[in-house]
Image (cartoon, rainbow, N blue to C red; front, top):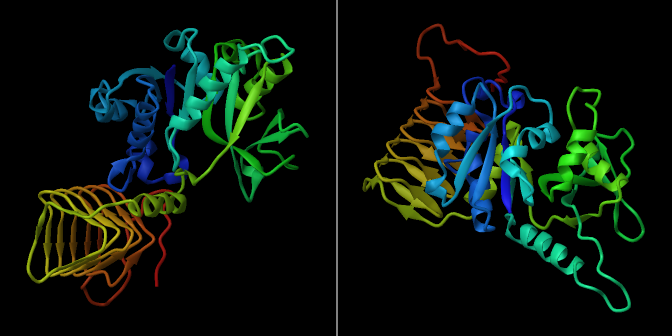
Length: 370
């Protein structure tokens, strides 16, 4: 089985962060989101992985992931010139995928349960389908397996309709009147039949080849599509608040590790990781939290649920429930919370008189002031 990770797309919902960086490289607990997906594939025994990238941010992903050796996999990069849909990603990956079964994963999604059980289930169901049953011949193996999750607002997702036998009979993309509250999670397993399906469908009204239409085509052509309902959490990290929620959930699994320098006047409480080269001076760090290599925490209070990236500096400030990317700084801020701070950003309290709020803000920013 091969793997296909979709890491194109413009990341418009995370602007301005994604004006200068791929959304899949935004860190969760100081580790790029994309890395968790690669780890999950490797843990599921999937070691040949294609990563679909865009012309604008693909070079960043290639530089970060390399040939995959650090993850125990081999990586092939496939460039999608325009964001023309998930099914289009399958279409352009035909040479890489060949006739092999494959798992497709959205590079900005995170699953608590990983992929190993999902992949094993697909293999088991396909193997069992070839075995004759009592009084019957062998059944046809499924051509696809989808992962579903119950959601509060199905109108924002692809939605599955099941019949009384719990079989998938229809898929609808972002329906006005959803047939169920079961949304498609960004994980799919396919056999080679999907290639004929993606070649047969037409672009949707938004100009994309929808994977829901391709799976529906499989169903209409008589192929079996099975499903599993998600256990544990699933988060699409494409917006700030879900990204911060994902950061909290991952930080909750930390084990304390202090490799950096902590002076005698500082207090470390709970599950805290302080990377080698980080320095904590006369400060409190309350976990779960992670302090990246080279960062300096000076006369400040950090945490809980904060990820401080590499080479950051926080001085005379309080930070909680936030993600700071590399080389950012926070100075003289009484409390910074629920925030995502980009690379090389500076947040500071201006000491000039008259006292005022002075801002330089890029496109698509949201600033909340006291």
